[in-house]
Length: 221
Image (cartoon, rainbow, N blue to C red):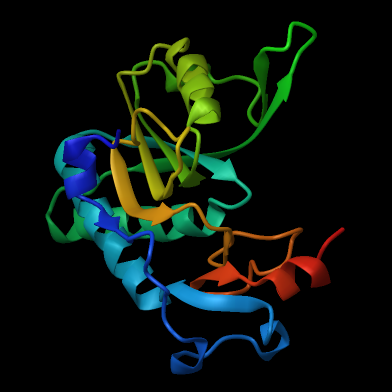
């Protein structure tokens, strides 16, 4: 069940919403036929990011911020979010310093058929001790990987740890606990764009769109 507080602060896209017609927007010509519909226009993404940055500053903006960006899909969201946080902090006469570290997550089943988390990134996360840590993730579905990452980060004794997710999927086995800050809650559909990819394609698409069956076949490995 989605948590009430985060749900109220997120934009919720209904399961039966068909999305915008692609012809209403511009997008790379080489993706014509590869997309089913446009879900979230770039301008709306940027507006939500400004709101998320404001909320983060209200909660965590009294001290410097250590940002952990989950690659690959999160890099564009992270860059725009950090830029908005810094801009808003300067305008409020309460400038803060942000440091960004990049990590990659890979979950897999071990010999005991339980899920393990492999983190590719800074070998030494002792820098997190006593810091305000913000984990930035582009999309959250089951939430299992994020839960394991949180447990790993908390071993280094940060002052606080918060998670911001641009997209959270509504699926039956979805995240029991939402990120602390949520941009959009979306149906369980395969979305691409704004650095979210399908086999490394569509990262150059500014909008968030639903990939078509033709697109899946075209770029299938």
